[in-house]
Amino acid sequence: MKIACIQSDVILGESKSNLEKMKTQINEAVKENVRVIVLPELWTTGYCLEEIGLHTGEQEAVISELQSIAKSNNVILIAGSFPIARKNGVTNTLIVISSTGELVKTYDKVHLFQLMNEHHYLQSGESDGLFEIDGLTAAGFVCYDLRFPEWIGAHSQKGAKVLFFVAEWPIQRMNHWEILLKARAIENQCYVVACNRVGKDLANTFGGGSVIIDPWGEIVSKGSTNEEIVFGEIDPKKVDEIRGTIPIFEDRKEEIYKKFQKSN
Image (cartoon, rainbow, N blue to C red; front, side):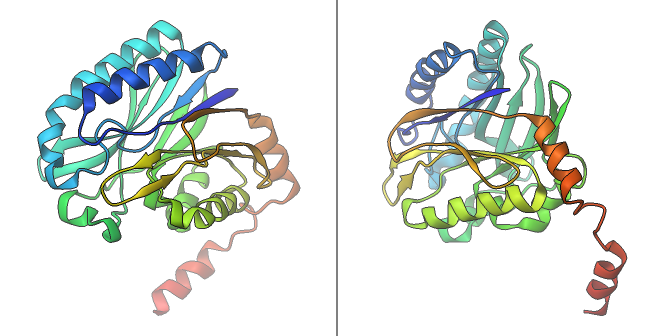
């Protein structure tokens, strides 16, 4: 399965301009016969959190156009995340679109990043990130979710073989980005596919470094700090081989873990 991660710069608060740019980049990726295209976190708006509610009305049309693009090009879109209006506020929502243009998953970011004041402007999600693509169980997460291994692990224990991360990860913590992504791949014996944006907003510089990592923690392909498309191939059979070599899921001691948790 060939995958493309589009690590793009974002114009703050300009959904239409960002969409037009992304369409051009998707067309470039499609030329390479990819099956899956991954986009970054909040790529239509960037982190304009103080006015994020003003942009939720624009997202339905963007998502609809992405559905048409996925269908016409026969590609699966891990379409990044969008500000979505809910009854209790705005969520940072990952969207997955099938190659037939169907909306197959919405995942509201569970862990909000207080360092960037997300908790003041966004609502936390409460549902899982599991979905299927071409019969393969996968899971999707948004940026700060990466730092919570128990949440990620719950998905691999439910059968996920590929973990997708979409992010706006700042350049000063890029060493954390790669180390944590490798750790998530190794401890879950999964492929990890992570798409990060590049460029700057009013307060941050973002580090790119989009990466595809195999279940041994080896890098398949990796991006720079510039705008580019990162290509790589994954083989789901390798997940089964590695899980058979080191049977960590069989060796888990759930009853002991629960006993310890109850004792505290």
